[in-house]
Amino acid sequence: GESVGLHLPTLSVQEGDNSIINCAYSNSASDYFIWYKQESGKGPQFIIDIRSNMDKRQGQRVTVLLNKTVKHLSLQIAATQPGDSAVYFCAESSGLTSGSRLTFGEGTQLTVNP
Amino acid sequence: SAVISQKPSRDICQRGTSLTIQCQVDSQVTMMFWYRQQPGQSLTLIATANQGSEATYESGFVIDKFPISRPNLTFSTLTVSNMSPEDSSIYLCSVEWMFTDTQYFGPGTRLTVL
Image 1: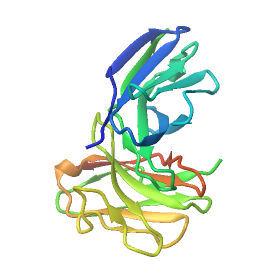
Image 2: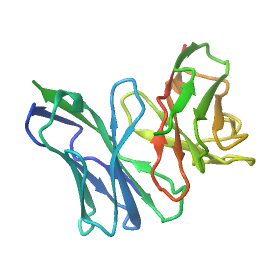
Image 3: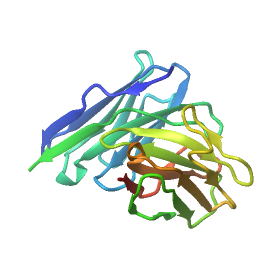
């Protein structure tokens, strides 16, 4: 069946460096992708999303890149801060209608060292 | 931004008992979902809570074990029935507004079954 997975379970970076978190997906019909941040003891928090008709989208300090050819998604965090330490999940859905199921990746633990 | 709340935030329950978790949103939403997140793992969709009708369950989840109600557009409950230690997880509700595909999550309910 479809699956969404992450290449690395943990990532450790120095404060101020840029972070890149990767995600692979297998469903070629996926057309909507979301990155969530989950801090300890909290629910996932929406960070940024991208549709399959785009290959790049930027937010505040974050950029999502989508490579449909190799079914790869990445989240780039600029000037990483200690408050960015969390587990990051990618999620994907297929179908343009509201209520499409989200399939989550396994998560990457980002640790920012001061 | 809308507020999504869950009650209780955490509970410790005895084997064989049942727990009902509430999800409340401060504005009307189109879709409501329930997820399970086992310790150290990703999120798995349990079911879609349908307003005024039976919930739509994912493979591996059944109504007898996880009865769901959604009496209106701002409220849903998930009951974990006849609990066993394997049900120890974080249970999360998420919501989606009309004309969007983005799901936003509540803070979660951390359940421990002894």
